[in-house]
Image (cartoon, rainbow, N blue to C red; front, side):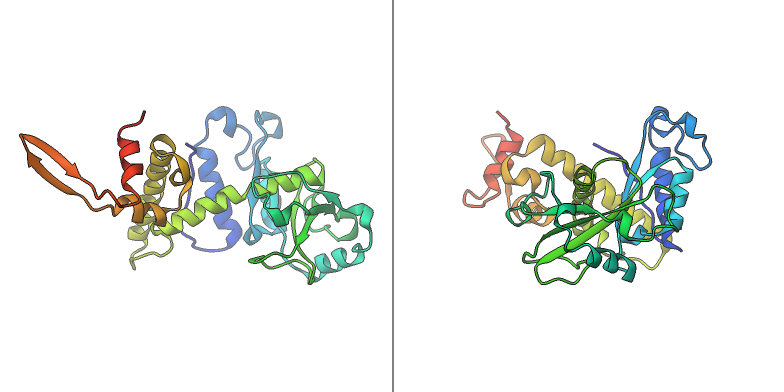
Length: 276
């Protein structure tokens, strides 16, 4: 089970990102954290580190601060006139686009996705040296999110990175960020979606309890459950397991727990309590 750090937002976005990052680095073993603190000598790095951030962290200033910690970056790009023009200028260059590599989100509509690099068509002079722009396009599908470039055929999504791999490999690396997005969604479903108090410290304690709850539920699913419930969302677990009605009774000097036979969660709970 991995470790994580979190904090409530107080000020500028790049400051919040750095605070969480420094806290996360502080929890790592020394062999992993070496060279990744602010101002560390690049020669002291023992294990390379890359940070993936959504569009809220699309800032050259944040990227420069990461470079100062000897940490690579891959941040989702925001839709800007420069990026829109860069994509538009190269739409007719079919040789620029290459098939994507299979990844964790390889759904039927995404098997025809392509990826291309647009570093040569956009001005990235404000970003750290070596920054690249990689863009992914896929056929429009129901529920598609906002696109970097207006189109009635494709959804365009891109990111900025300083990593040296091929665009297809970098695209797969960035798409694996979906695991983190699933974790955030589960945290929100577990109580982090709203802060119930007006006191800052009380809300901080609430956030810590939500994180602990998520870790315990994740451990329970991994260790005790099988089938669909092993990856089920918290809401489904609540209605099938946590809210499972039961009656505690005593008969013949025994204490019994009676469960409703027709409830969909009964078999899953019994299988977790008595694994084969």
